Structure formats: C-alpha cells, structure tokens
Image (tube, rainbow, N blue to C red):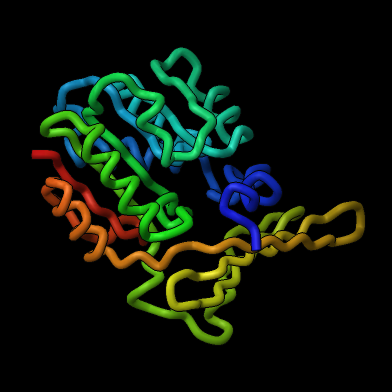
Length: 243
C-alpha cells in the first residue's frame, strides 16, 4: 500500500484540481467560510496552511491580508498554487506538515489543516505530535481550523463503499473504501479515455479513522479552547483558540 505522499505524487496530483469540480468555487467557499469565522477582524499576521495543496485555503487567507506559509508534501500541487497566487503575500514550502514549525520564525495568528489532510498522517501519535506543535506555534488568541472526513460514526457496507467522485467525457474517478479498525483503505480508480480505449489505473492508501471528540480532547490537553465542533460542507469542522 502507498503512503499518502506516494499516492498523491503518483496518482492524484495531476487530477486533484479537476476532481474538486471547480477551483474557483472551492476558493470562494473558503472566502465565505473565513469571513464567517471573522478572520477579517482578527490581527493580520502569519497564517500557516498545513496540506495547502493547490491553494483552496492559502489564497483566501492571503487575500484577507495574512502572510501565508503554505506547506505540502506534493511539489506539483504547490506549483499550481504558485501559479494561482500571483502577487499575494504567500510562500510555499515543500515538506511534510509535521516539520512546519521549522519553516516559521514567529507565532501564527491562524493555522489551518483542512480538506482531509489530518487523516493522511501515519498514526494517531503523529496527530498528537502535530497538534502539540500547533499549540506551541500559535500566538495568544490565535485560531486553529481543522476539517476532516468522518470515517468513525458511519461505516459503509457493500456497494455503498463505491463512491463516484467526478466524471467527464475523458475521465472517470471512483473511490472505494475498505474499513479496518484504525484506518480506512482508500482506493482511487481512475479511468482515462485514450483514443477509442478506456484505460484504468488504481492506487490505494490508508487514512486514519479519527474521532472528532478525541481530537477535541487532544486540543484541550494542550490548552486550546474548542469554539466549534460541527459538520461543514460534509466535513467535520473543529475551530479552536489558544488561551
């Protein structure tokens, strides 16, 4: 089985923006979401985007006036982000998000880890380590935003485990889930039309099954106050504040 990094580099990176449907719509959703969180009212300073991908979070944060450090393990997606960001105050870092603190030299007003990035870590110990580093990196009254998929409360069975992601006249992406105690194996089945033939490529990788209440407990242990613990756009969304 691939690691998350291998899976993205070999299989998903080239179609990641395509499979979201609309990059502009994804960025606009986060513009609205960050305004809802009143990020336009907090002090502008450093914002760190963990698992920045092609910029769905980084660009709206930079537009709000933050100095953004965008961290991701996928060079191809960071290249897309640089192409989109133009003259925005944004710096990309090609590294594992577990090393993000090595790339900042001041406390962060905002740290986000969105999409399904948190579940890409290799173990719950890695999650607790990351959250501890986040707690130390945040400025007093700084905000943390986490989003990730709920693989715990509902376990799909049978044909429910086949999930159509996106299709057009030349590509079809389907996801298949196989549940285990600690992880869910995610199989991405990509069919591409080449001439008159349809060719299929398959890759799989594990995602952690993270309980949202357990994540909130870890945040409380490191001195963060959970402000929101809810579902937003089909994802678990946890917002916390330091102090």
